[in-house]
Image (cartoon, rainbow, N blue to C red; front, side, top):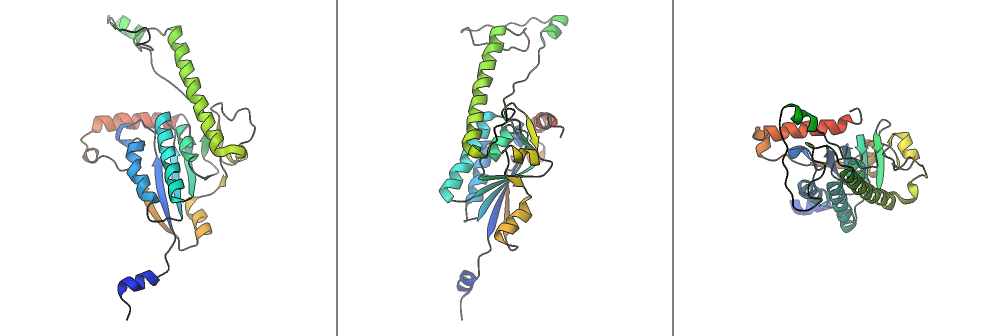
Length: 267
């Protein structure tokens, strides 16, 4: 009579797809944010155990360029080390840094209504210099170094500061464009609006090469690996204290920032 361990070894192994949910703004939004540090254990676990594929469920309006780059680079390192294909499934939006995450996949699929692209860089803020003047507040800033203080929201904008910021944004944009070109290669169409920050929806995103097709996670994976394919789901956990309402102010501020980011795309 065969032992239980022997019987288990004889059972055919069901193919497993690891599903990683990447939901929300990147590198901003407090405990809710997608960060490389927060996702590192999630991604390590997803690639462990010989899955037949890793599926990324992406719904992100973007955020920090550096965190986007770090997360995407980690996904590629693990995919190459483990020799596991990665497929991105875009839900409502994969824009800006969210699209950067999608390019970590070998293949990008989306819904007919998904928003993709926004390959650009943005910086925004407020100016309060007139407000504090009306209430009689005087702003005092002392620095050592000509460029130490710039774009102070309580002082009028300086042309030199605006020009310097423009150079930074342009350099970051060049990095973003180079990354997309390196990942998508010949699949990209020669469209003059491709890297202007424009957004494409569903089939149009496929037509310009930002996505490879229309498809949803479960039916696509079943079609490729059979009806008996198993799904293991992974996601970034919230910090322990925030689950008990002990960081409500940070959580509320993060939620507002995240909703603002999604709001740029009407979501």
